[in-house]
Image (cartoon, rainbow, N blue to C red; front, side, top):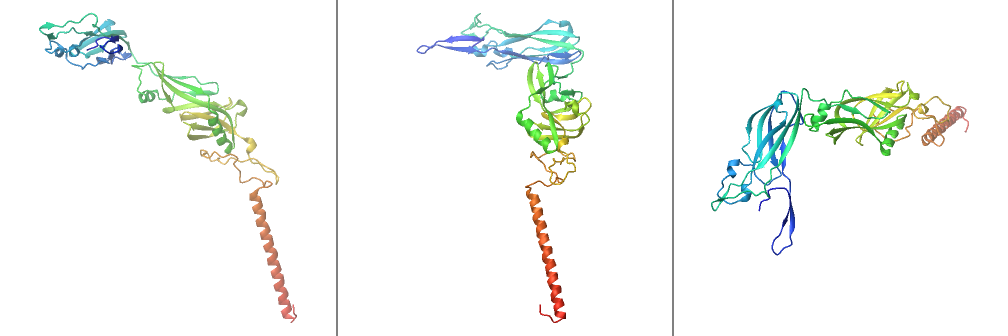
Length: 388
């Protein structure tokens, strides 16, 4: 039994319940691109897939001496140009196989060319008992498909669309769109490509982590941003681009009221790597500028003036100084960093240790003084033969 066309058929076997079988649609494939530049020459190929047949020469399945319906099934491939025939030159066509074809095509002018590819079922030509076996109308089926190619003078460039919010401003000129497309196996000849820079809501956990890092270094976080870059091809999301995209210059809003203040940006990349951008200033518009080669969660922070150590009377409590003033990336997430210049606090165990040392030293001084006094008395008594 050979199934020659797609659809559903009902099978009945004596002594068994009847059942249905679904025959899948054959698929015509081609290497024709969606668009191509004028003057390009290529070998156009077509194929008929999703069948149980082997690709053989048409002559091999004609006039076979053994009755085998499946072996007799074959197709004659054919390519027609429905429109734009004057824009192409055709050469070296090979249509001798039942499931494939090839032809050299040169695209000579701008416009749109529409190709129609047909795999026309060949009639049975096998001989059984000296008679030809014909194909009935019920089983006769020829798959076909159309493909359009836009011939252009130059392929369109891939652009990055900035859809970030008011708190983020980006300079996209450093983004390497060619590398992004190559890494994800897409190109403008075959796809409509769009790269979008946008924002998402940062998780509370990521925000808190960055706030702890900033607080430890004496900075106060003003805003947290989740910046993402997404690649789309033909309207479908292909990949979330977090690195290997070149360089991206961004301005993150801290607040106009902080203009002129020292700033720092903390980044949590892919939920694991922490990066710190130092020696920054808030500009007059309230933004902090950084250049990044990775994307993820950013926290823009300004120097916490309330925590800077200033001279104070003994016994008063002060804030912590910035322990990372050398600009190194913060790695520890512990909070409440203490400055070495902090004044003593009531109940501070470190200060109690100091007082204990002072007491021991004082007691030692008294002992030394008393010993020297006794020694001098004994010496005085010995000189005068006086019993002490």
